Length: 58
Image (cartoon, rainbow, N blue to C red):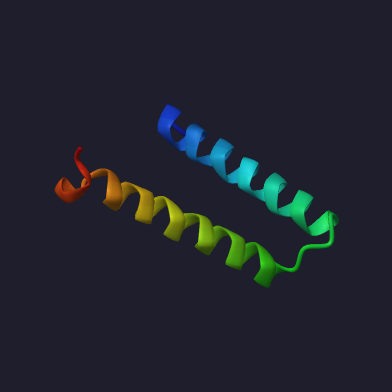
């Protein structure tokens, strides 16, 4: 019997499947989805690194 953590992981996977299926039904290709997710990850990492940069303090 799966524990709570495994159930949570399964729920997240189902949400991702639904998200990707929705994007595909809107006509996005898998490559477009990958590019979007990659760009989002890079933008988040860039924001995170500038938030920690001591030179940006007032």
